[in-house]
Every structure is written in C-alpha cells, then in structure tokens.
Length: 202
Image (tube, rainbow, N blue to C red; front, side):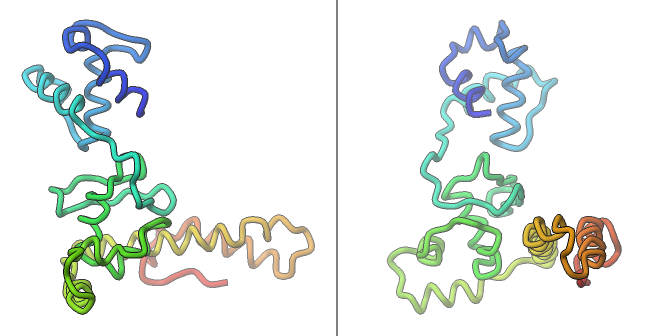
C-alpha cells in the first residue's frame, strides 16, 4: 500500500483526477489509499476528491514508529475520533493516544514499545509519581473495556496456538489426541458463547 501512497504523492493532481495507472483507475486508487489512511471515504462524492488528494499528499508516514501491535490486530482509537489503528498505519501519536485511556492493560496489545511509554503518554516533564497516578486513574469506558477484553483473549488464544504449533506434529507426543482437540477448541472459541469469559483447557 505504501507504493500506492507514494504514487499519489508524486503524481500531479490533474493526472490523478483524469487518468489511470498500472494500479488501475486513479479515482479508485485515491479512495483505497484514503480509506487505508483515514478509515473511510466516499467513492460517489466527486466534490470531496480534491480534499482527499490534498490530505493524502500532505500525510506524513511515521517511519520511525516506536510501537508495534501483536499479530494482525486492529484497534479503535477513540481519542482520535474512532480511527482504526493497524501495523500498516500506526504512528507514535496514535499508539500513545490509544494507550492513554488504559495504559497498564493496553500495553499488552503491543509486541514493541518504548520502556518509558508511561512518561510519553503522561507528560515528559511530570514527576514519576504523577505519571503513575495518571496511569492508575485513566480508565476505559465499559464499551472500551469490553473491546479490550476481546483483544486480550484473542492474543492469549494466538499465543497458545503458537506454543503448541509444532508439538501436535510429533507422532509420539504424549496425549496427542487431547492436544489436537485443545487446538481445535482454541480455533473455534471466538465463535462460541464461551468467548471471551471461559478459556479452553488442555
């Protein structure tokens, strides 16, 4: 997707509005890239296309992001108007806005983050005690907490599948049938009524 972003940034506006490229129709491309960056776009609103192009052209991709989400998760950043954050569009600002709501819980969503993340979201010039107090008192809404719980349980499930990924291939592994059943239960779990409150057991 970054090659499409670069194409729009480097191509003249007149060409973008009137032609096509090896990516296909330019208008479709603009809608695709705008949606990737900002979550939604109107494909049947020609009056908005110039605004889309200008916003894409001025968009600065954070190439030195200090955060990375675990797996292929996407999360909603309510502090930024409900924007969706993935590893494709994540920036330091987005990650820190997301963490600011419930830092001690939400940090578990990331596989990579700076050690001083609490300082970054709480204010670099504030004393440590104040930063920790902010972290304790910054609580999510009920809706955000429920969404967080779903992600946490999916992360646990993925880690269990990863841990047992090679074991179930060993022919003489003890309790192989139980392990196979456990892995099947893990895969099916999100679509059952037990999710996310009751974890499968081995």
